[in-house]
Image (cartoon, rainbow, N blue to C red):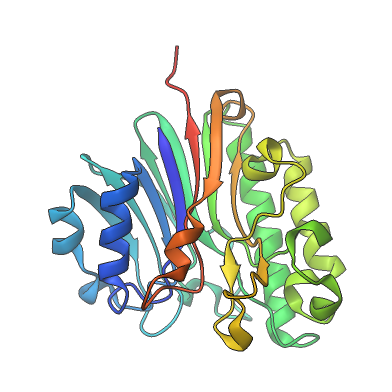
Length: 263
């Protein structure tokens, strides 16, 4: 089973690029982020024509997540994290969606960016992270193969950014953000790409500014985390970075894992 995550940065405006990649890569499950569209304007017909069932959690102009499954319908199990954050209007932000696909529980998540920091947006990011960590612990207790996939908006280590000194003040690289990500992993999750490629410079995001793509000035902020039941099935992981270089591309590239079939 090939499971991918892709921050499309506006699904309707970049639909041709998404459909092109789906045809080329043929992932079995796709977690999308930053749909930037309402539920009513999600391009369900085009996705279905490409051979994918879909569920989505949209929001006008911002955020939005979806899960696609090739040749089948994802079975939704959760929409939004439990225990909302009324101070920040957490339940009004479409950032988390969960579904079962062929015996694997898959979550598509879009963690808050948190900039500028310090400030209320960074505080919200950390509160949202705490809610994710709590829910992730409950998921692990289910003893199921689970994949948490999405744009975590965290640069885990200095090896995940082209020039760490240029990002020291950014919310993606703050000690609190990194500590929260480390605590999540410590529950028993495996960072699939880093597990298989411990020493490689691998990026998933290149900004539109200052010719970041041309200079390979990237970040690794899109992650696929595997539960203890899923991790032993991991056979491959990577990033389709060439997608970022195409005309009208998102500023993210799709990241993916391959899990062996169940015995």
